Amino acid sequence: MSDTHASAAFVRTEEIPPSPPPVSEVGIVNWLRSNLFYSIPSSILTLLTAAFIYWLSSILMPWMFNGVWDANSIRDCREILDGAIGGCFAVIAERWPQLIFGNYPNEEYWRAVLAFVGLFVALAPVLFFKLPRKMLWFTGLFPFIAYWLIWGGSAWVSVMALVGVVVGYVAFKALEERSFFGAIVAALFATLLFWIFISPLAVNALSSVVALSLPQVESRFIGGFMINFILGTSGIALSLPLGIALALGRQSNLPIIKGVCVVFIEFIRGVPLITLLFVASVMLAYFLPPGTSFDLVLRVIIMITLFASAYIAEAIRGGLAALPRGQYEAGDSLGLDYWQSMRLIILPQALKISIPSIVNIAIGLFKDTTLVSIISMFDMLGMIQGPILSSTEWFGVYWELLGFAGVLFFVFCYGISQYSQWLERQLATEHR
Image (cartoon, rainbow, N blue to C red; front, side, top):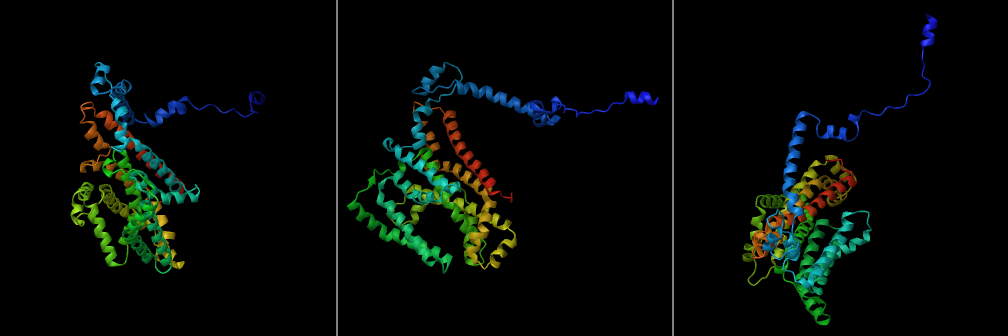
């Protein structure tokens, strides 16, 4: 008996090779089961979504792929299509200068394109920290260069505006050691006084010596997507520092400063943007001295900046409130004053926490720039609703033009969103 068991015994001397996983646990089958058909409700939703996509594609695909890109009018498009389904994209091919530049002079397009390219060069060192810091010099100069390129006129206007900022910076550095807040106020006053009293005289004197100028383009000729881009970028860039100041002011222990900031924020948040735009377009002229000419684009930029700064202030206030009390006490223990503590400890952390909210406000503001078409500014939607659709050649072409505008805005807004997510990963924020 024992001999039989000994002869039947088997001891494996080598390791069993690993078996392949079941077919249902790998590859496309596993992905489909895990993501689309995990349960009965998810399977029903997947099938309904697939049916909706198929229905939508059956309408859009023929419309897009049978589209006409070469025609002189909507009537030509209909003759070419001969009853078939297809879009009349020829309107985009013919009217793209109006959609992008508005009524900007054709021979001056290079100036707008150069300013557009310069904007990305100027933003690069601000958005990407690993680029050389020397590029920030161009970032500081770009607003003055862009103004001269887009609006034209004497270059000395931009140069004197830059000199005014330098004068303010010198005043700030001279008083920074005594009082940070007082230095900011002195810098603002010094800049304004230079612009009001010295700059006009200097521009006239320098222009009589060297007439460095470009053909002037009035604001009413600037339109299309270009005016949306100008309003969006200007509003976002200017509202961020103002929003920080309002957020700090709302947390101030000084009752007057806190009261002013609270009233401003609550008033602006309680008023629709379109109302502020009407104030900029119509009402603001009543509060200015008779004969004062205030550019409409500048008025709209001011209103958009004030509107966005109120929301950004609340977003940053949320970041400030999220910080533990120990962070404030850390600044006190190091012997830092209020502004040093805010600049070196509190604000970097609060801004990092507030990135998603600030980006959300920036995207909303960029899309809200299309509201200026209501106050007779020919932005991209204004050009579509006005000169293009009112023409006899393209009357009735809606979906192609609005789809083009939607794609263009989506590209920029999606780019902003992707950058914010990349920035959050770079900063490795843990406060989400």
